[in-house]
Length: 170
Image (cartoon, rainbow, N blue to C red; front, side, top):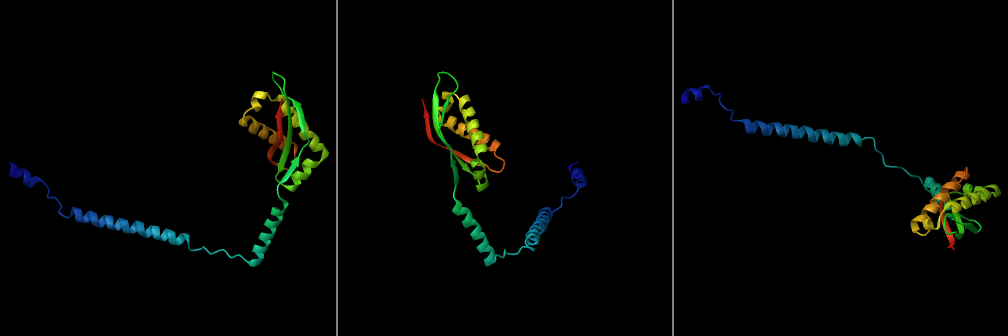
């Protein structure tokens, strides 16, 4: 019976390993060829940038004029305001607004906008409690509030940063 089972079983192919090696080699060559073609096709239309001396001079002149202006900082008059909360405390501070551009600096210099900005800052300070302003995070949060409120007043300009040159709480 064992001879009958051996004769009924199909013979095993002896070249299976060699056939798999050939298939893998062909697949590998196809993938590498496709990748090389994609790299070649993506770089066909590329040209090195051509910069003329005139363009460089114009660009240099524009950056020099912007660098000569420097930061535009508007220093407001000192504030003395009562803080909110208990116990009652007062705060004296001087606020400096760094403006993003010359248009914004000129806009914040207008008397109407100065008055509106001072009013907004006084309202913000009246709402703050001493406990909020003790920490560094509280002062940074106050700076963000002031910048946001003053930016709401301005139409052309943008407040880039707020600086406190004098900050005393009593």
